[in-house]
Image (cartoon, rainbow, N blue to C red; front, side, top):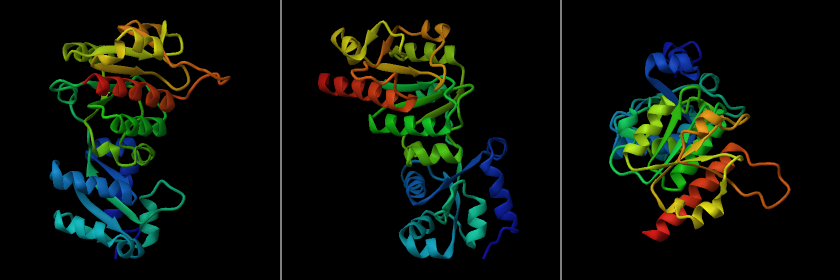
Length: 272
């Protein structure tokens, strides 16, 4: 039984920090949902994605199916006491399951390979919960990839992974990308670039009426507090705003992203 003083636990604890993740090339996925999705990806298309699994005795009993799936995939399972699992958790109430996974980052060209139809680009989106939620929304909308530019939150952080509800394991994710290179690459792949911003010339309804949403699209989303600066908006083919029908001043990043991504997905599916 591993404890807080165990070398393995101390090493895994370093992965709760971005610097530690970058140095080791590993990150932590906590909780049954994230661990299930990580193991499913390991079994289906990413052998070796999960390198080891930590489980407290109560969690090992409660989630016996996950332990069985890990063993079937050849993933080492370490039993640790609850204080040790708490060391690896970034939540108030740890769930007793933590998987150590290889970083998911893929090169930009690989993330946008083939003929993508819907991509989310996060430009300096710094809130990890928002980053994870946008990844979840992109996955739900059937997007082909998510790109996070330099200055954005790390999608491998605990809060991002939890907010994604396992979606980090479902689609290609590129991190630390150069914004101008990303936009240029998206265009080479045949994607129109639409910037989501309250200063947009068109709203979503008008963009749909103009036929913009039927095209393969990369949506560009900005910083939570400051939105997209003028120089970034100028990189886009069109700036589009989400219409506000009530009295709310605006929508937060994740909500606006969900609305835009689903608007494109709905029109694209109808056209196809």
